[in-house]
Image (cartoon, rainbow, N blue to C red; front, side, top):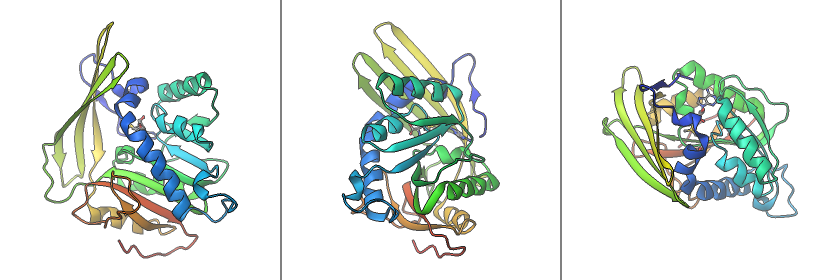
Amino acid sequence: MGKASQTASIPDGYDAPEFWDLAFSDETIPEADFIEAVLQKFGPTSLPDSRPKSSSPARILEIACGGGRQVIELAIRGHHVTAFDLNERCIEYVTQRLRRKKLDADLFIGDMTSFRVKEQFDLAHCLVNSFRHLISEADAVAHLNCVTSALKPGGLYLLGLHLLPPDAAEDDCERWTIHSGKTRVTTTIRVLDFNRRTRIETVRFSLKVTRPTGVLRFQADHRLRIYRADQMRSLLKKVPELELIGVYDFNYDLEEPRKLDDELGDTVLVLKKTGRVTSAVNF
Ligand SMILES: C[S@@+](CC[C@H](N)C(=O)[O-])C[C@H]1O[C@@H](n2cnc3c(N)ncnc32)[C@H](O)[C@@H]1O
């Protein structure tokens, strides 16, 4: 992972998983519904057929789980969840959350480029751009190879990321606010530097947390890798055991498949472990 650079003495939002998690909490239910719908539509045949697949407990691996919003939601829905993150504070926080809610999941500190797991999963997922923290092709390939080893034959990998079409604006800034009880979290994501040649952009993630007790601020600059659709296709060709079987966007609607092309920004790829060593990418 490209280490984030912190600004002055402002702490990194990734070290405050409780607020980071809140910032993305609106996405949790649509993402979890999509994960279950994908399992039902494309999941490994090894899932029991006696019930609709979506309600069968699946073995799910979350990669870069952050504050654990998806770990909690999928555990509540009865799935067997394993999750990891590079950040120790995230794993501590998710452990406490599970304990408080009397839920169960397997957690560990791990790196997306080198993790190993003992069992194989029906589905793994890595949503909301975490994958773009891997800033070299070698790391991206190493990651996809780790995922392949972690999946059952027929297992699925959902990879969510923002693609940057050739004509995308380079000076992007996004801001939104989430309210939870008396806490208000405003997230600002601003592109500071953007280089098509090196395929790296530097993005400032800022959180402003307003509570009755006062205001907290978090900020860090992260280096993220840039992908166009053709660059993603070229990466996927290097891991032929994972076949691209579906392309969607952040509307998480299985009825609205997309094409992996330059029209696409927010992207969710559905990859399937085929057991084959060559495959064609048709999207
Ligand atoms: C954008 S946050 C997403 C958190 C969570 N998946 C969510 O959707 O709320 C990115 C996460 O990726 C983790 N991360 C970054 N590089 C990593 C790596 N090489 N291996 C594992 N986790 C990593 C960070 O610690 C952070 O928790």
